[in-house]
Length: 281
Ligand SMILES: Nc1ncnc2c1ncn2[C@@H]1O[C@H](COP(=O)(O)OP(=O)(O)OP(=O)(O)O)[C@@H](O)[C@H]1O
Ligand SMILES: [Mg+2]
Image 1 (tube, rainbow, N blue to C red):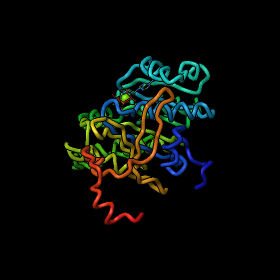
Image 2 (image 1 turned 120 degrees about the horizontal axis):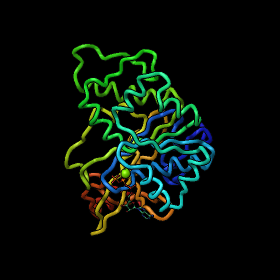
Image 3 (image 1 turned 90 degrees about the vertical axis):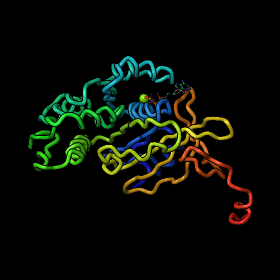
Image 4 (image 1 turned 90 degrees about the horizontal axis):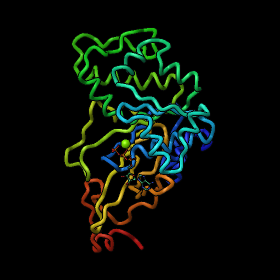
């Protein structure tokens, strides 16, 4: 696929990692610990689209729209103006309402997407949606005429299956409307993977791409790291890169060189003897 058909995030170094940007009509997961930059990355994706005339939606289950206007303003992104121009809509709702809404044809979200001719959506974060779906057995997809239109899971299907089916239906509904979706998801641990790999309803398997943000500690300083772990249908960078957040948003930099153990949160300089033995100058 050529570069100009990619859905760029506008984060130069990150787009390069993605082989030019996301593939259109895909669902893309950004996962990371608190404060590491998930919402910023997502807002930048929406802002960049709007700058290019591609309307976008921010769907949130937690923060008020005002929070997004304020966070965006800190980076010089005027979200109020974009809303006035019909290039952005910030929607706060509950996971249950979203699920029911998507089960019916011409629901609010479907209508908003069509009316705005939206191309991008940020769901910030999917964590609340996942936990709500895991605890609400009545929200299973039912209608065959709705945007979701996947039918009810077979009797006896395990809870995990039902949860995964709902998430799958939700994300597929967005795909059918031609959306490129960015989902943020929280991890509770700050460094590495001491809690183990928490798969939830198998979201990592459902999504088309999966990017992890991490804090890493190097020589007594905390840095931010980004890695693209999967991207269906495309080559991608496999390096662990450093990124920073500055007044323009995320800035992705060079890979961490000569470090091992980065993703486990305990990077060490590679032993000089190892480098001497195995790396040709
Ligand atoms: N204008 C700015 N300039 C530099 N850094 C900033 C600026 N605004 C925010 N930050 C940094 O970005 C971080 C917040 O990023 P963001 O809200 O995107 O994280 P998050 O992963 O979504 O967090 P949470 O899990 O709490 O939702 C702040 O902790 C701060 O370090
Ligand atoms: Mg956030």
